[in-house]
Length: 188
Image (cartoon, rainbow, N blue to C red; front, side):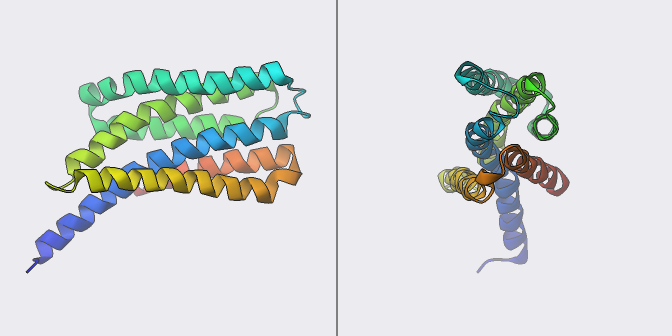
């Protein structure tokens, strides 16, 4: 029989897995959003294929750079602290992209968004794994992949809804990232 302490502990573990797993949701959503939003920003900011390619590549490079330092930062400064910090940087990057007034702000926003998305991944996976009870680590880490897929799906549906809105649609897509990142910060 399960005691109330075990149930509470299980709830706390799943809460941690959900909040930390939202990093996966946001990371996937950031990648798909950027791919869609750059096309929607194309005419407003006169982005050619070179600029769209540069911004897409920059996002990927910054995710990789963030992932290289995120785990070490988590070990050194504490996973929860670094997770919180990466969510703030992610939100700042998303805000920069929502308010972008020109290509320069797109580049700055992509750098912040990508770095935070990369840095939060090793920290969030470690938080999930460390909070999981014995024999359930794989199950709980797999849950973060479900959230990753949810991020892809939600942005694809949003893209269908706002795709005809051009620049406004791009801002809505990045606004979604901003709102979710702020909700994760409040709930953490």
